[in-house]
Structure formats: C-alpha cells, structure tokens
Length: 87
Image (cartoon, rainbow, N blue to C red; front, side, top):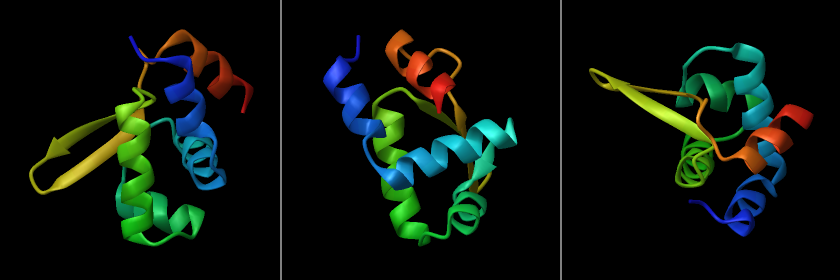
C-alpha cells in the first residue's frame, strides 16, 4: 500500500497538478507528447512527472507498439482518489 506522504508528495507540484487535470479532462489515454503540448512543458520534464505519478499509483500507462499512453488509474489509493476528485 502506498503511503500518504508519497501520495501527497506526488501531487505537490504545479506541473503534476496540470497533468492530472488534463488527464481528468481528456478521459482517455494520452501520449507524453500530447500532455506536454497541453501543459506547455518539455517532453522530458513531462516524462519525469509522469514517472513520479506512476510510482505513486495515480496514473497508469499502456504501451502500444512504440507509443506509451497515460491515463488516471481507476485503482489509485483512496486518498489519491479523494484529492484528485477535488482538483
């Protein structure tokens, strides 16, 4: 089980909040490039934030061929779900 500190740390960044809000709005799996363009952040910076959100079980990733798609994880920890619903 993920700790509350890890959950709070994962979302305690304005760019990660932007990513979460974007994924909530999209309601579909989205590539790093699409996310980076939408939140106006570099590809590398976006990837770094996505990895952190993934390790906190807030998002999930799915690989299709060479493309990786990200979406919010329906099975995220309860605290994460509560906070993300409030964003």
